[in-house]
Image (cartoon, rainbow, N blue to C red):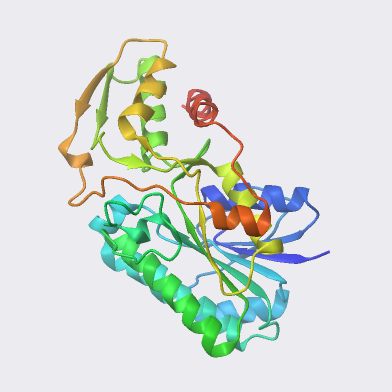
Length: 313
């Protein structure tokens, strides 16, 4: 039985990833901060602060995993504007600590999957969509900047130390249990609150014109698992749906499932200092190398997210 270590397993994606790995007969170890808790009791949980390299190295030597998924990150674009220092500490310093600790560990030949973001591509050329992995990165926000650094660091460590590193650029992933700091979950939470009479029948929104590539988190973690098994060392892979959709169209789907009439109001506090018009992935590479393809329609994902909030408010 292969051992897997999920670094940052208490988050939204970590829970789904641990579940699919356990269901596919991996021995799953998962880390969280002392203030967090791993929900899946079939995981072997460990407390870890990735800003403490010594602790990372000790844990790697103790577990000796075959595959590592590095999920630990400050992943909110909005928060990265408000707190760039935290984002840089976790996403850059933390990633270097993990890579350095793995290099020095007793199982330095373990495969590590570095989870980055489609946001790294940033302000792309007008004719660049769908975006291929060899497109030059041009980050448009602090979060994207830190993830672009992580990807570049991964390439350097792979070449310099012959490490088994796979780099992922994951585009927007959504689903039940996601924090309302992210747009689809935010819309669904607001609708659920309105339906329960907890707020006035008005949804506050940011930029509705931006187009993003959304994928159900269950499809995303299946891609991660398949990359762990079949991905090629040193390669970079896009993970997304391969299609972009306007935020306005997302909102229309959410509102169409509401049981009450709702007004839409633009909230200037939800507008970002800089927003990229279109982000859409070319996913032909991961399809070719692993056979993965997304399966869950966005309408189904939105409905499950809305139902989650209806049941948890």
